[in-house]
Length: 75
Figure 1: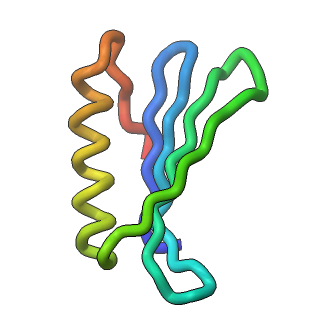
Figure 2 (figure 1 turned 90 degrees about the vertical axis):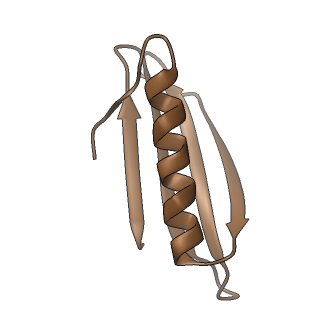
Protein backbone atom coordinates (compact mmCIF):
# COMPACT_ATOMS: atom_id res chain seq x y z
CA UNK A 1 0.00 0.00 0.00
CA UNK A 2 1.37 3.38 -1.00
CA UNK A 3 -1.35 5.83 0.03
CA UNK A 4 -4.64 5.62 1.88
CA UNK A 5 -7.21 8.23 2.87
CA UNK A 6 -10.53 8.02 4.74
CA UNK A 7 -13.35 10.53 5.22
CA UNK A 8 -16.36 10.28 7.52
CA UNK A 9 -19.62 11.98 8.44
CA UNK A 10 -21.84 11.05 11.36
CA UNK A 11 -23.48 8.24 9.34
CA UNK A 12 -21.25 7.48 6.34
CA UNK A 13 -17.62 6.72 5.44
CA UNK A 14 -15.56 6.92 2.23
CA UNK A 15 -12.00 5.74 1.62
CA UNK A 16 -9.42 5.50 -1.17
CA UNK A 17 -6.40 3.21 -1.32
CA UNK A 18 -3.60 3.51 -3.90
CA UNK A 19 -1.91 0.16 -4.60
CA UNK A 20 -0.05 -1.76 -7.31
CA UNK A 21 -1.80 -4.80 -8.72
CA UNK A 22 -0.21 -8.10 -9.77
CA UNK A 23 0.55 -6.71 -13.23
CA UNK A 24 2.42 -3.71 -11.81
CA UNK A 25 -0.31 -1.19 -12.66
CA UNK A 26 -1.28 1.52 -10.19
CA UNK A 27 -4.88 1.15 -9.01
CA UNK A 28 -6.97 3.51 -6.89
CA UNK A 29 -9.61 1.52 -5.00
CA UNK A 30 -12.59 3.55 -3.72
CA UNK A 31 -14.87 2.19 -1.00
CA UNK A 32 -17.92 3.78 0.64
CA UNK A 33 -20.66 2.76 2.98
CA UNK A 34 -22.84 3.35 6.00
CA UNK A 35 -21.73 3.16 9.61
CA UNK A 36 -25.16 1.78 10.54
CA UNK A 37 -24.86 -1.32 8.33
CA UNK A 38 -22.21 -3.57 6.85
CA UNK A 39 -23.19 -2.74 3.29
CA UNK A 40 -20.62 -0.97 1.16
CA UNK A 41 -19.63 -0.29 -2.43
CA UNK A 42 -16.29 -0.56 -4.14
CA UNK A 43 -14.88 0.71 -7.43
CA UNK A 44 -11.36 0.41 -8.87
CA UNK A 45 -9.65 2.88 -11.22
CA UNK A 46 -6.38 2.25 -13.05
CA UNK A 47 -4.20 5.38 -12.87
CA UNK A 48 -1.07 6.32 -14.83
CA UNK A 49 1.33 6.22 -11.88
CA UNK A 50 1.87 7.01 -8.22
CA UNK A 51 1.82 10.79 -8.77
CA UNK A 52 -1.42 10.57 -10.77
CA UNK A 53 -2.91 8.39 -8.01
CA UNK A 54 -2.03 10.94 -5.34
CA UNK A 55 -3.61 13.70 -7.47
CA UNK A 56 -6.73 11.51 -7.79
CA UNK A 57 -6.89 11.24 -3.98
CA UNK A 58 -6.57 15.03 -3.61
CA UNK A 59 -9.40 15.59 -6.12
CA UNK A 60 -11.59 13.23 -4.11
CA UNK A 61 -10.65 15.14 -0.95
CA UNK A 62 -11.95 18.40 -2.45
CA UNK A 63 -15.19 16.73 -3.56
CA UNK A 64 -15.74 15.21 -0.10
CA UNK A 65 -15.34 18.65 1.53
CA UNK A 66 -18.00 20.17 -0.75
CA UNK A 67 -20.60 17.53 0.16
CA UNK A 68 -23.44 18.45 2.53
CA UNK A 69 -22.84 17.43 5.23
CA UNK A 70 -19.10 17.69 4.61
CA UNK A 71 -16.94 14.62 5.05
CA UNK A 72 -13.95 15.13 7.37
CA UNK A 73 -10.65 13.44 6.63
CA UNK A 74 -9.75 10.90 9.29
CA UNK A 75 -6.39 9.83 7.77
